Length: 247
Image (cartoon, rainbow, N blue to C red):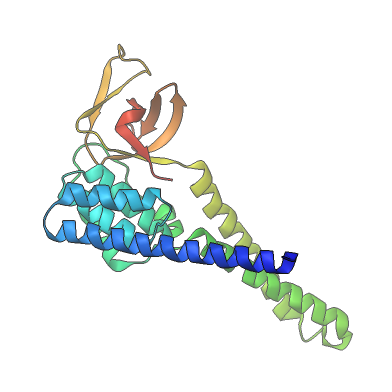
C-alpha cells in the first residue's frame, strides 16, 4: 500500500470517527433535552455537562445547561454556563435575558458591570481582532497604492491619514479588550452562604457572606483560597471549592 492511499485511508477513518462522535453527542443532547422536559433538571444538567466535558461545546448546549442548572436551584453554576455561552454568542438576546434574570436572583455583595466591560463583552475576541485588522489592511493597501502610483499620493493623502487613524484606534481597542479579558479574571460563587474571610485562613475573621451566584473580581490566589472584591469596598478571601472561574 503506497503512502498516498495510507493518507487517504487515515483521513477517511478520522472523518468516520468524527461523524460517529457528532452522532453520539446529538443523541446525548436529545436525551438531556428529554430529561429537562420531564422536569428532571439535575439529571438534565449532568447530561449536558458530560457533553461539554467531552469537548462538544456550543451555544445551545451551554444555554440549556444554564437553564437546567437554574431550574435545579444552582444559580452560580447557571451563571457560569450562561457566561460560557455568551463568550461564543455575546449578542444572543435570549441568552443575555436569562443571564440577567439569573443575576437578579443573587442577593448580597456582587460585582457590578461597568460600561467598559459591557462594551468589551459585546464582541468575541475574534471579532475584536477583525475590527482591528480591517483598517490596518486598508491602510497598508493605501500605502502600497501610493508607492505603485506616485501620481495618486496627493489624492490619497486624506484617505491614508484617515486609514492610519482608524488602524491605530482599532489596535488600541483590541489591546484594551485583550487586557480586560486576559488580566481581569472574574469568579462566581457556586456554594450557598460562602464565608469570605479577611485572610486566607480558616481561623481568619469573617469579612462577609457571599451568596450563590455572586460574582467577584479575582485579585489574588494562595493555596486553596482566592482573594476577591465586588469592585467597591468589599474584599475577602474565599475557598476555591466554593467558586468557579468565569474567564
